Image (tube, rainbow over all chains, first blue to last red; front, side, top):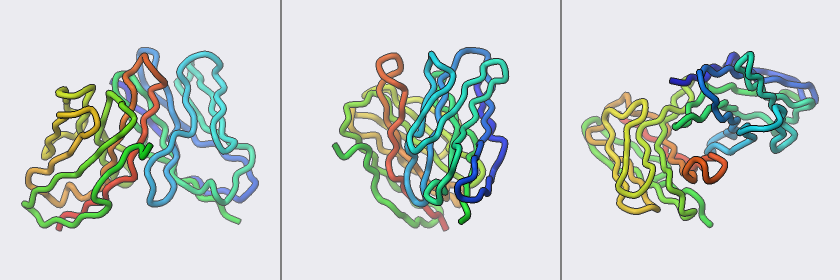
Length: 110
Length: 115
């Protein structure tokens, strides 16, 4: 069975700084990978996805992620964050069913 | 399109009570799922359905029942509420794998407290 590990439960960062949210997955077969964002008191919204092709995936709001098969990682990055990026971010992999990581709370300080 | 809708938004139950959380989608999605979200544990799959009349258990099915009589609706029943079921519940829907992008669309959630 696949599993997803988000290596940081909380990431504080100052506005306009770069950020990386780390995600590792374990699966012996090819999977599809996703990042979802959850703003306070809302449902989840898809940020980006990797299904196949280019390993660098661009999503909404300036986020991007890189699929690294040899390291079984799918880290999320943004070169310059805004206050409005404050939210909880979930990495997920899909092989038959969608399995979520534990979530990373990103807090952007002014 | 309304997307995925859930009712109620908030609910307080006493231990032992039963209730049904409603979920509906208007996107003609085959797949529907129920998750619960607890702090530090991400989202865990309770039950899912690959089409009308077909349901299966997820990671944490105990204490919950589902049915799928139509493509649009996927209600979640709590049979006898327990404090351990205090959580935020999300319903999600998607197209069947292989046909689209596997993206799941989430409802706004139901915040349930069991006292």
